[in-house]
Figure 1: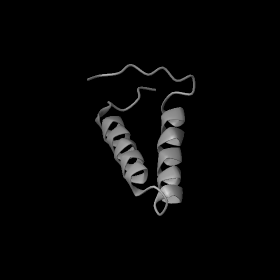
Figure 2: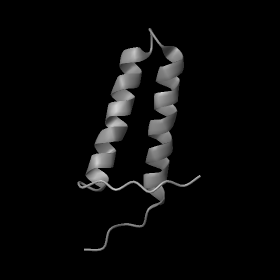
Figure 3: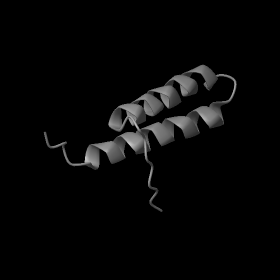
Length: 58
């Protein structure tokens, strides 16, 4: 399923979200490993999707 996500800060905002998911996963690794794994998967899936985008035109 595809999702349209509008972020005022563009790719920079999405990059910050990915970093937050990874930081949160690290913080929850011991207390909630299932959640940490899910957040890591989400972060990597978003990162993979970003890699598929064409480079910005200047």
